[in-house]
Image (cartoon, rainbow, N blue to C red; front, side, top):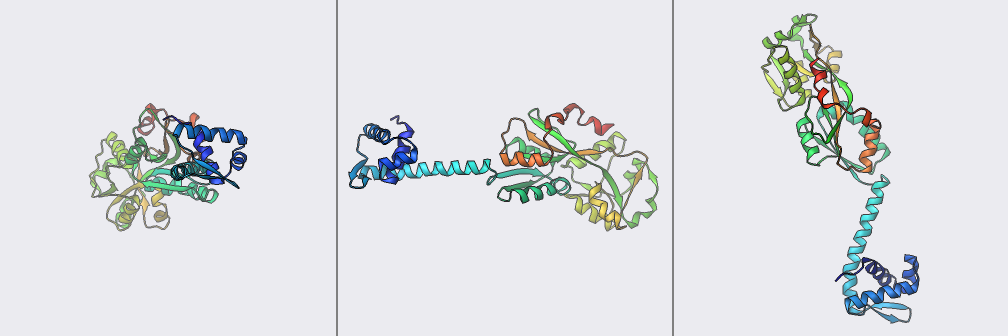
Length: 313
């Protein structure tokens, strides 16, 4: 049975209003057009749906059964339309972001605060994970976009935009004061107790790769999950901590840690916004990305072949 869904819409309004004339006014169509639609629906279904009463019409027993189903379906469609319009008007919706502790704390958080003040009804879900997992979530469509740190490998349908420079440093506590003020060779790190992130992180991958290019192989005393913990371990003199500089600035300013100096500078790297070129994202997510100053995203796209070249120079 192939019945025009418009007939069911008219049927819903007639049943709800109890009047062909009032239904026509609500739908902005003539009363004869309403009557014709109902007659065609009744013909297709093989049964009368309404009977006339002094003040309009009422449903037949068969019409009552049909209306119970049409009402739920039609009103659910209306609910969906309303939800959709609210999303377009930024009154509702959800944004899914992937970010590590580092990218969340030292880049994304201020923007989330600003966005929430402007659009308090938009739900923001942040999936906390290191760069490799954030990339995986993006490939699987579980997040709208991610904030990751270099280095990383990306597929052809993923775009990456550099948004903030970061600097890796080695820091030490009072137990290692004999190193303060000295200019060291990276090779000397092999003789020191090192504290660094776990191997599944982009930060560890970067440090290992760069030091390996200088014929240095780290054998850490401690491999930890977060940079905050590395700083605490270093303050307690459990070893030399390797972290992005922002994590250690407060401890350095308070004199609890100092930065080791080397003959060569560790290259800077970047935080990146990653998103799927072919993945549709909500208006709310686009609004947040605009706050992240990505309006000129196409002019800032990273050349994948150069992504690691900067880190090797």
